[in-house]
Image (cartoon, rainbow, N blue to C red):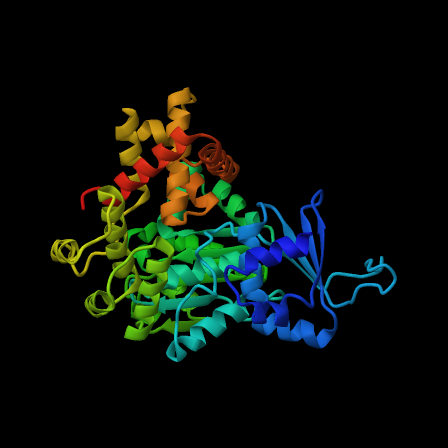
Length: 438
């Protein structure tokens, strides 16, 4: 029953020929009580081929089909020929967590690139393999909108497949500064003890240390702590580390110890593929000529995402498809250098206004029903529109524990499914966030 039902689900995305090639030979065993799916390969050669050619697509489809919390294990062993039952002694070769805690859209498979960016992609994949750190630290450099944050989150999601997501620190320099100043109220030793519990340290936008000079000395201490313990560190930066004259020399030299991979600007063909992918996802219709016009005018993913968000919001608000005249008007009022301006503060401002609250109510500790509802909605929408991780949500909303954010997102998701008014409210608030000050 399971295999047939899953095959029906997969048939919406894959041809029957493809499924006969890589899906039909699999044997699947589901354990709902343990929330575990075991996949058995017919022989080792098929297992190797599957890993290289079909595993990514298979796992992405499973995430859409199964509930949260499922684990997946692969075993290179055929079913017993007596009754089709699995041998008791069969052992799992690989166990993965199917959840994507750092944003479903951030995977290696969804990162569009061509040959000129093969090295940073291959390096990123190598870094997140299980085992002792090979390149520590690993630094991804690239201009704004090149996809650094996407790759960083994709690496975090890949690590989370075989590691407890709670062992991963993923945030920006601002998040790190807030952790010290807000969550631990300037208690350096308390913050260090907290961070020392993480196995992986992933920091986005190193260039932002320019605005936090006092934090650089602390970062040197954290760096030494992780490096001496053999724990992986991953950083991103919009520029070359050697060119940052504002960095503390000790921090700069440490960031240059490991491997630095440069992400080159995305070519026109990649930008076209990105737009086509987003159009399909958002069910947005524009002509081929308009697609090429956007890709020629907007040089990176962030800018393209911003204008596509505006087009989709206009379509939803006006309840009709975007006409050629609409397209031209929207484009005429769009700054070429400005992408999506949505931030957590945007979401909080919209929801505060809707509920008649202020910013401190949403990010504070008050437990009035109205405030709790607004806070949970804000967390959910930040997760939906910005892909914020649960630890990041906790820091944004006043230094709360990540489990609070997980509960909030789960509750709003469940309410959307069971309560039409909640679903309409979420849709309305998301539209307001997307169109605020546009």
